[in-house]
Image (cartoon, rainbow, N blue to C red; front, side, top):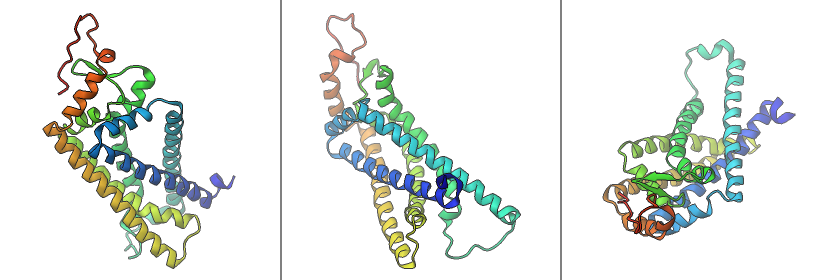
Amino acid sequence: MWLTCSSIGRKFVMALTGICLVLFVTFHCLMNGVALFWPSGYNAICEFLGANWYALVASIGLAALFVIHIIYALWLTVQNRKARGNDRYDVVKKPAQVEWASQNMLVLGIVVLAFLVVHLIQFWAKMQLAEILHCDYVHNGLEVPPAAGTLFIQIAFSQVWTPIVYIIGFVALWFHMNHGFWSMFQSCGWNGDTWISRLKTIGCWWTTIVIALFIAQAIVFTVRANNDSFEEELAKYVNENASCYVLDTDASVPQLPEVF
């Protein structure tokens, strides 16, 4: 099959999965923006995107895209190194048109993958995975419903290292997406000088806007997490679900522990 047996086919698979991942990252950025202006709306989105069948199908599909993208990236890297042979050890001056990101896509991808693992542990594992396993995350003696997304933002960004890790991950993602954006179209045949120039410009603007919004969100979330500006919204959410999530079921009158 040409998608696996030829270099062009493998590059096409990389391009196709890359397009889907760029669209997901853009959607994720917009969804996070809801938490800035409408925290209860963000919690409603988290509830909608819980362990429902459509959300699970989407999650499985997204995971498959990531795995395929990573496998093909490693495959192409090994193929390119074998093709160059010992020449790759020669110290030569790189052509001016060869971008730094192009020479370091694998390293950038590894940094992004490490950042993704941290992100999954902080959010997905406590939300959709917890709902699948019917084992809610416990915070200050209270079982937290998976839909309480603003609480997980508060917990994550109240830690000093979180914004640092996120910003490093976002910078690596900017380089990876910026090069990958126009490169995936080139792999699909749009490799004329005119179109490549246009796609590089579009890719730079698209990637810069998305990553700038992500960094701005991380900064705002950090500030809010450390001055408890989410506290009122979270307390309201917890009180509305008190009968379902208080751990001390023997108490005649449930007493909610402090959220923070």
